Length: 89
Image (cartoon, rainbow, N blue to C red):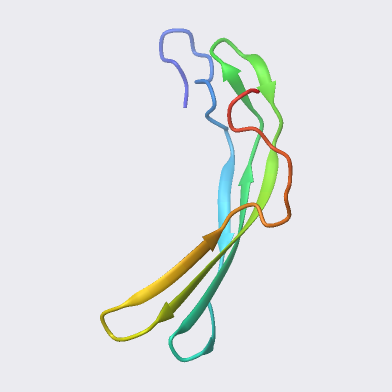
């Protein structure tokens, strides 16, 4: 994402980012979804100021279908407790 006026990257928008996840169903009604979120370097302020480091974060989501119409879920982000910043400071 770039500012069309200055041709500089927009603040806090990485050039490269992605998410890799897969579903595991160890038993009926239970689904586990581990995922890795990858975010490349980006700038905290317009004009390429205050560079933010790239990071990788591990998340986990668990779903349990209690009935056909009721599902309970839990989500945990940054399970490995990696230090990262989406916004400077």
